[in-house]
Amino acid sequence: MSKWIEYKMGELVDLSQGQVINAQTNYLVVKEGIPLLRITDMLNNNQVIFIDADKVSEKNIAKPEDIIYTRTGQVGLVFKNQYGVVHNNCFKVIPKDNRLDRLFLYWFLRTDFIYKFVNGIASGSAQPDLPHPSFKSIKICLPPLQIQTQIASILTSYDELIENNKQRIKLLEGMAAEIYKEWFVRMRFPGYEKAKFIKGLPNEWEKIYFRDFIKLNRGFDLPDEKISFGEYPVIASTSIKAFHNVYKVEAPCIVTGRSGSLGSVQFVNKKSWPLNTSLYVKDFKGNSPIFVYYFLKNMNLETFNSGAGVPTLNQNHLHGYKLFLPTKILQNDFDKLIIPIFDEVEILNEKNQLLQQTRDLLLPRLISGKLSVEHLVAEEISEVTINCKL
Image 1 (tube, one colour):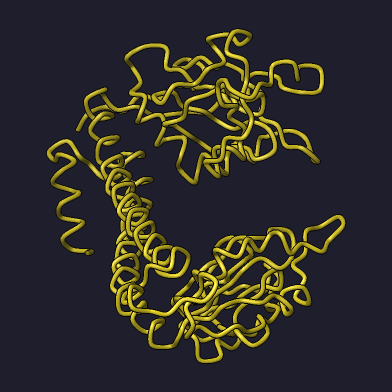
Image 2: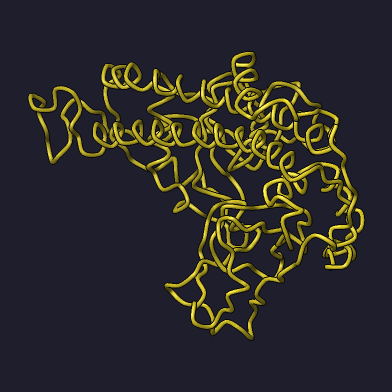
């Protein structure tokens, strides 16, 4: 067995504080430049602020290989594969020499133990903050560099498989969305050449009010402390928040934001619990759920906002909205084409859940040395795990 040596983080890494961006430095903000990497930008992969490259020091710019660590507000989150100007609420963590493998460091910082530890030592009650000296006091045990690289490679292989599946999901979802637009927006559905059109719309389609199309209901209250872990998704306005042991709505569950965040539409093909910040489709009124999902996604629901302070979806405005409803035959034909795509997406999502669970189980054991990898290679562990789990 190789010897593992304990260090303090400050012996192994340098920290590079991010760029201060506030009212006094707004002159740095431009329409085109280098993306600003705030915590929310990295979490949501949504870069909306750009900084003048000529006015930023090179040390404040993160490249994909750099490790970014959050130090203020949401303490202890770790990012890589980013490019942009690191915000002041984060710092870059830079290995000093070859005693420490960069990817091993990344995975070490990703462990639940370190996340809890740094949140325990962060100062400040209203706004937690992790000073540089506190971060540098973290203890880390290192095996020889070769073992570090091997451990990091095993864990990274899971992330690569997950990312590949995400890309496949994105392509499949894009394909389904494009078919919807081709059929129901561009009106190039099967048999359109022979269809009779009046003012650009098929004669057989029915003009109805939204209230006769579907019925939306407000979701259900469920405080965090009442959630008991189970198999049923708890759906917030923009994403699945948790999993509960009780459900309120049969599958499929189609949800959109009611308060706070508007415009996002989710299709969850499981018994679910939509939260009270959302609206869910209570009655499809004989329409295809898949068609309803894409119709809502293309409605620009955020334009129906009626809230002065907090954005709120006004159902009364929706009820009076007029739409042209395709025939049930055409909706069923659409289902036949799209359902296999949805099924493939669901399979890929399930694979990713298993990969994430396996990676998260391996992470603390590999990083602590409890699971030896000296006689294994990453491909062997990955192949065995995938064959057994998937």
